[in-house]
Length: 308
Image: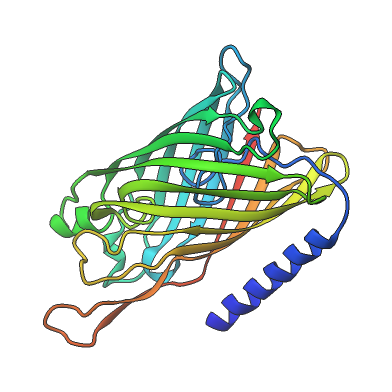
């Protein structure tokens, strides 16, 4: 599996370099890109851009469907999202996160099938290229609030009747699309304060932490307003989930490809391989040398977004 990770990374790097060496121009795909939580972003992290909307009033909704194959322990996750832009500077939306339990009898029951709610909002504070300055990035702040989260700690506390927990992210992000490179280069980075483990998929973290995230990507133009974006996405995670203090969760790394089919400018299709968590080691109390294998080191995810 690790060999597969290296091969995938090599392919992504070579493809990105090939795009960089090509000449031409393309408009970056800013709109209709809903990430996992429903905000405009990549697979897991938000961008500073917002859903399309007029300067006065609300835009038409953008809808999305997301799938993550969590593996033999975590099970499968499904999200359905709707997001609306407002006043060309903001967005808000709702996502319902669903889950299908794995067949693992030991750790699988820690992930509940009831799912949970995700509410989000974002405001663009600094528009990209403000004042005609091409170096100015878009800067936004936002939040993500999750309710009815029963994964991990909620189930550990009461297996017969899992408890509903809440967690949230508050973030600031800057994003810049550099067009002077010929092939647009997309750079984004930010910081989030969170008490959620892996965006709520791993339940809650024991305390609030400030964590960094970032994206680097290239956009390749296709005929008739189509495009392909290759990106690498990194997101720090809390050290461990609440209730499993001996576990050690690594930074999430995602290799993603976003496709806007020719003639389908309102549709985006994303594919990605996410390095989530494999063997989380920290020593189970009373059992020296133990480790937990979540079997989620390299997992496939995909999503589709459509803007009306």
